[in-house]
Image 1 (cartoon, rainbow, N blue to C red):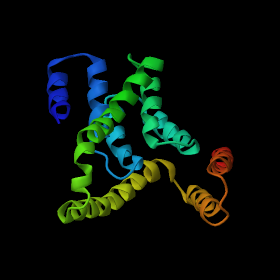
Image 2 (image 1 turned 30 degrees about the horizontal axis):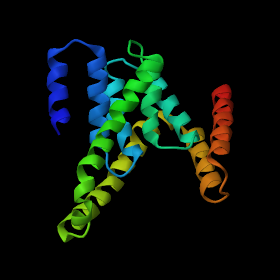
Image 3 (image 1 turned 135 degrees about the horizontal axis):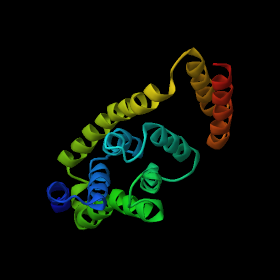
Length: 193
């Protein structure tokens, strides 16, 4: 909690880009509950408007992150690496990754001693059920913006998205194959347009 309050204050009084990056990724990591996709709008709001990365770089990285196994939070490493000003590259990737994962580690360390007591309390269980329900809305919002608004520009894009959905859900194709198919489909759509 101390870092969540003190980092924005320190950022306000400092002109250092490294502190701004750490604050942005730490806050995004702190405000996520229920899955990495919830972090998308938070990260986009932090890195695209100030020009750290372009929206195209953001969406391309998100697409690549969907093709590899592991938590979506590793997308923060990509963003840190492709930032237009230092820290970027390997240092920026490590800096952003540490900042986005640090809140989770601190929460685990802080809550672990009390977990056995908390998990059986009716009020705590009710709060978690409410938070989980709210996460569904956040996930839908993350699907719409930035994913849907940046990817679906016309009927052909919508058709390609339906094909990708069918390949994943009904034919159970491996995600990396679906990414390959949609990349090829996107190239065909771009060539025809």
